[in-house]
Length: 330
Ligand code: MG
Image (cartoon, rainbow, N blue to C red; front, side, top):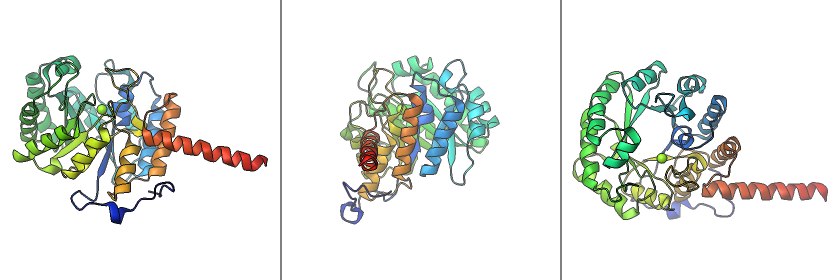
C-alpha cells in the first residue's frame, strides 16, 4: 500500500505480536453487494469491476450465485460473467450454490470454489431459503460431499450468527451445532455471518472461542461482517486477534442492508485493507488501486457508496483536482 501522507503507517511500532501478520480479503461485492442493489449491472461492467479488483491484488472473489435466474435477476448472468473473467495465477473465483442444480451449473462454469448458505435462526432461514434449518442442513449434508468429490473448495456461510432481524438474540450453540455438522460433511471453511450488522466485539470473541473449544480449527473460520451499526471494523479486529485470517468485505461497502433501506451494508474492503495495512498486517492488496475500483463501482451504480475510506479518498481526489485546476488557471 502506498503510505497515506496524512497518517503514515508505522508497522514496526504498532504491530502487536498477538495477531496474525497476514490476512486474506475475500471480496463479496459482485455477489453479496450487487444482489442487494436495485440496479441491474451489465455483465461487462461486472467483469470490469472484478478485473480491477484482481489488478488491485484481491485473490478471492465471490463473483455470482448459481441460483435460478428468476430468483435474483441481478445475478442471472452467472455463466456468461464467469466466461469473461481474467484467468490469473493465484486468483480464486467463487460462486454460491443453493442446491444440486446450482452445483451442476457451477461445475459447468468450471468454478473451483463454491459457497453454501443457511441461517442460524429459524425465521431468517425460512424467509431467505423457504426451508427449515433442519431441511437446509440435510440438503447441504448431501450437497457438500458431492462438491468435495468434484474437487471443489467449499465455504459454508452461517447467516444471522450474531443476531436475527426477526428473532433478535441467536444462541451461540445453534451456530456450534451447524458448524460441527457442516465440517463433518466436508466443508473447508465456515463463514460466520453477521447478516444485519448486529454483532459486537464481545460476542465475536465468545463465538470464536466456543468453536475453538469444540475442536474447530482457527483456519476453518472466516468472518463476514456488516457495518449497519458501525461495528464492522471493531469486530474484524477482535476476530484478527483471535487468529482469524479470512475476512469478507465488499468494495466501497457495496450492497445495502435488505432490512433497512439506505443503511450501510457489508464491511467496505478499503476500510479493512487500510486498517490492517496501517497495523502492519499484510493483505497483499494495493489500497490505491482498490480505491480506484471503488470509484468505478460507484460510477456503475450511480449512487454514493458508504465506505469510509472510499469517501475519504474521493474527497482527497476532488481536492487534488481542484488544486490542479487552480494551478492551470493561475
Ligand atoms: Mg453480506
